[in-house]
Image (cartoon, rainbow, N blue to C red):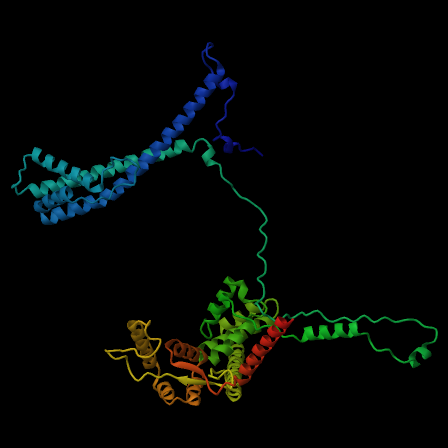
Length: 502
């Protein structure tokens, strides 16, 4: 079988016998000159190829524009030719070929030079401005240039093909590339389960039983049993308590939330989403969707709750079908298997109905137990809560009377009174009426009908505006304190007198 060595034809090799020069010139210099000549020719060829490609691209842009100008001049006559020349002179487009040359002309400048050249050629033929043959002459000149451009483009393409053929005759460093590369790509790690997921494989409790071999088994059986040590009992109780602890509820991840928004019966979309997001098909995902469904139904979002139930059961069915469960399940659903779809959809409806009933019972239990409320309660029996309800905005002429008002600024007082009135006016009518009644029970009743956040804001506004007031009632008994003080003074005088006698 003959061997084919043609693949080595593109290698440019040389040895000492290839280089023949003058005996007075050393061979190393000749080798370096030959290498430099080879590299210079390669660079010149690269520049030549780049220039040919740029000229061909420029011609491909100009040709349709010249054809359009030719058609318009042929249809509208010489005046349109003059208007185009004027537009190219006064308002040319900045579009130009993508080169790095600073003196690169724009396309409109090239077209202007062409049209002026056609105009000069028409003048040389003896056709003046008012000559009726002017339009035909201009159109003929433009068509002649189109033919020359086609011939020039064909020549450029032929030169480009020749230069590229010469460039590929020899293999250079630029032609070296990786034919193929084989390396080990480790598989992506499995995504972690949902936070709060209940583990399915809990370690079983193992008990170690020690048996002793004795000489008299019957005597040992009749012997009284000792109570277990307190440390062992504590250890067993602590382990059982740890086992009885309940884990936190699983929460939705961002990917699971997107998965739950897929419309009902969107099996194809769900299948594509599971293939693109591996962290959806993980332990605890179906439980997290059921928890989200319960919360959505409690908040009144029945549509999302039903979608969460649908997607949760979808994942449960995939898990029950084994290792290839997702592909088996979605193949049946997408193909429209009547038995499979009817069983699944009925399960979704029953589960959602059960969820709705559980939400109703939960709300009823919360209502019976009573929700959290904000109430105003005095700290001690001697303290009372009153309300400084303003009768209206501060008057125009405000006067401050009484002791301690000398250092007060009347404008600050006016602002405080105005703020109190604005805060009072911002309250709802039931709360205003309760404040006017000066009844703490009525105010607490209104606060109890509000949400906790709203009631906290109302109490804060009452305190800031000075409407809420705390005062202590009753008579303080300070008689004993005064008698004790007098006795102490008398004792001090007697002691001083004794000291004086001694």
